[in-house]
Length: 102
Image 1: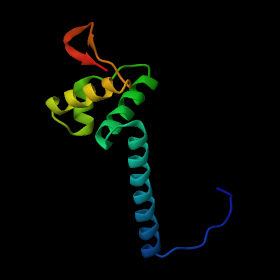
Image 2: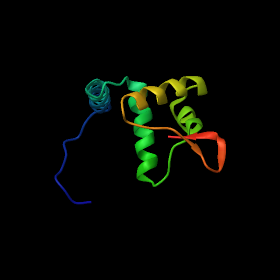
Image 3: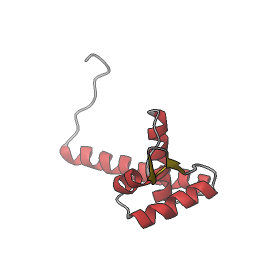
């Protein structure tokens, strides 16, 4: 791949820059969550919902719980908060009334 040559970095420099990048990502997540009136877990789950929507599907509560490493009880609270904030809505899956689509 042709492009602008980059200066060589030591492993320590590369590690320090990766740490900085990750810290900036965390700060950005907190900022976005705060602006949307959400906490980080809710923002993460909203991201999963938007990802599913972009793929033309709906996320299920069970999928969200698994991806966010939450219990089904905890994901119920997340979905409730996302609904109250106006970012999501839940509906029963027509193929399986026990399943909740978000």
